[in-house]
Every structure is written in structure tokens, then in C-alpha cells.
Amino acid sequence: MNATRRLTGLAIVAALCLVLNGVRALAQAPAAGQDAAAAKGPKYTQAEYNAEQACAAEKVPAAIVKCADDFVSKYPNSDLLVYIYPLYYQAYSAQKNYLKMIEIADKLAALGDKVDALTRFNAYYSHATAYYAMISDSTVGPNASKDTALAKAAEDAAAAALKTFEEVKKPDNVTDDAWAKQKTVSQLTLNGIAAQAAMNAKDCSSAVKGYKAALGLNPDDLTFNYRLGQAYLCMNPPQQMDAFWSIARAVTAKGATQAQAAKVKDYLRKLIVNYQGGTVCDSLTDAELNELLQLASSSAERPSSYSLASAADLSAAQKDMTIASVVNDLKAGSDKAKLTWLAACGLEFPEVPGKVIEVVPGTDAIVLKIAFVTSDAEFDAATTPNMEVKVVGQPEAARVEKDSAVHFTATLVSYDPEPAFFLHWDKAKVKAEDIPKEKGTPKKPPVRKPAARKPAAKPS
Image: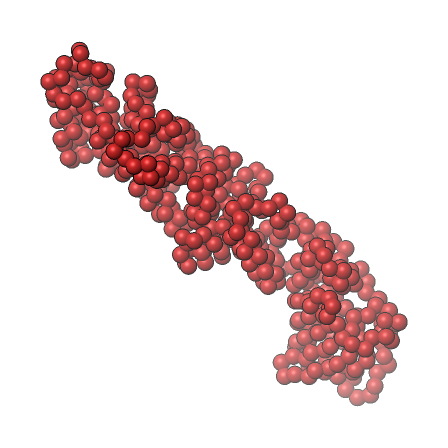
């Protein structure tokens, strides 16, 4: 999902620029000539100050790194490291040296109470965003994503940043509205990174928590809904219903382009088909998918009552299934009818018995309108059809006569529910013994009750 990755990446860049620009403006070293002994706050010598200012004046990343290296070697315990470290990791960021960026950000965070909350927040934030930039990099990302230690450290850094941000005071020159937006962007970014890092660390439950936290701030986000669905799928055991719901919300997200929505919808459809063991009837899958999309678009949380039949459910329903049991279940309606139809649609049933009510000849196919019967009494009473049988590749079936008994093998493709109950069959073949010879009138074969034979298995 390159599109979803780009969307999250843009949010991270925006937040990072805002935060890093703010830290330098709010945390400048005191002016030269200040009496260090009397000053409140950092203590440093004039030489330290001049060295720090020289590094700050550098523009080229390599020059900044060299200058910072020199400063740290000369003043390893300087109070001005609080300004050197951000210069360091911003330079490494420009060089795409993400591991060094993380290393320096961690050193700044390790200063703990020696630095203010905003500085510590930026340290944790820089670690988290460096990790995301690294796993998004086409050259190092594939290997970096497999490093569980890196992932766990990034998850911890993101969590620390979120916690520390609660301690950061709003600057006096920033409006409440601007600060609230800044905070939301940063929280979205950090929760997203924490969740992605948890996924890479194979901690799917934590990933679910991270993505849900992000969606609490922006419920309609395409990326986070899609990623939440993947997190549910990787849990042990997988939580398919919650996964389907989340991915459906990604399809219907307001910010999704038509191409993104179509791609995610196709992916969701394949998930449903696999979950149900390879459903043959496309119309049923489409109906389930459309219902899911409609429901998910209006609710962030999946109702406990919503579910789809699994492959195991359908297999159990097919175990002792006969055409007689299918007809009875479908006529009865309710949830049993829904499960039975999911299990029966697309199956081939052998030797279905019936009484011919009408024969409709055709060029490519012959359509038989038949009443389903299971006894002589039903045969004698039947006057209207409740099955339409499309016979293909058997032209001699046109000789079947009205009011005669037949048996056919066919694929059940659709049905009309009560009160106008009707079964629709395709690819049918009439039993040869039930077709009259070209000359003469055959003796009417007896009606046979359907045996409890299983329908043919659905193709995989």
C-alpha cells in the first residue's frame, strides 16, 4: 500500500518541521558575555559558547557533524549539549543517516531532567520519526523493518514522546487553536509510528491499540483504518470480523481517492472469499461486501451482532445437505436460510427430482420449468413450477414432455425467496433414461425420492 504509506509520511514531515523549527527558536543559548556563574540555567564558558555558535552557523550537514564531533570531544559534559544534539540529528537526518540520528536523539533524551519537556519531547519524537523514515527508505527499509529491536525501541520512543508532550507548555506566542492542531498532528504521527513499529516487532495487540488511538483523533483516516485491519489479521488468533470492518472503513474514508478505494475494496473482497473458503457465487460475495461497506461507513466500531459465516460454518452446513434440506431451509427463512444459501449457492446437486411443467426450446440452451417433488402424491398435485433449469449441451432434452418425471444434475445459482419461491439452475444435464427416444412414447419413469447424497464440492 504505497499510497497509504505516502499519506502517513506527509503527516510526519509536517509535524516534524513544526516541532523542530520551534525548538531552536524557543531554546537558544544565552547571549555572549553573560556571567555564567550568576546566570540561571545552563553554565558554560565563553569558549564553549563560541564553539556552539560556530556549529549553529554551519549550513552544510557534513560540516555540522564535524563541528559537533569537535564540540563533544572537547566538552563532553557541557550544558550546551542541549543545543548541539539537535544540530547533530538534524544534520544526520539531511544525510539520511537514520541510525546516527536515533543515537544522538537518545543521548539528548538521556539528559532527563537536565533539559525541559519540549527538548525531551523532540528527542523522543526525532527517534520515532527517524525510525519511520528508515523503514520507508527503499534502500534500507526492507531490512530495517525486520529488526525487532529497532522496532521496539521506536515504539518506546513514540510512547515516551506522547507522554512527555503532556508536560510541554504552550508557548506564549502560539494561539490555543494553533497549539491544539500542532498537538493533534503530533499525536496522530506518534500513534501511527508506535503502531507500525509494534507490527514490525510482531506485537499485533499493541499495534491495534496504537491505530485505535490514532483513529480516536481522526476516525475517517484511510491509512490508519487500513493498517488497523491488518493488525487485527495478524493477531493470534486473527480477528477477522474486526479486520473486515476496519478495512471497509478505509474503503469508505472521505479522503480516499477513487483509485485507493477501488484497490482496498478489491483486497477486502478477496479476504472475504478466502475467509469463506472460496465462495463460488459472486453475487453473494458482492452482496455481503456491499452490506459491510454500508454498515461500516456509519460506525467506527463493529457491532457485536455483525458477523460473516466462516469456511468452517459453511462446511458444517454442507455436511448432510441434500436438495430437499436446502428447499426446506430456504422456505423457512431466517438466519438458517441465509447460512444454507451461502453453503448451497454454486454447488452441483445430483439427480434432482421433479415434474416437468413447461419446456422452452432454445438455440444455445433448453429451459425446463419444473416442480420439485419428492413423492408420488406431490407429483400428482404439482401444477406450477418452482424451478427453472437451464440445460446446456444436451439438445435431446428438448424431447422431455410436459407432466413427465425427470431427474437432472445441475449447479444451483440463485433463488427467489417466499412467497414466490423459485430455484434457478444452470449447466444442467437431464438423466438419459428420463428423455424419450426419438420415436415412440416411453413409459413414464417412477418418481424417486432424493437420496441424502452430498452435492459436489465447490471448486477451490
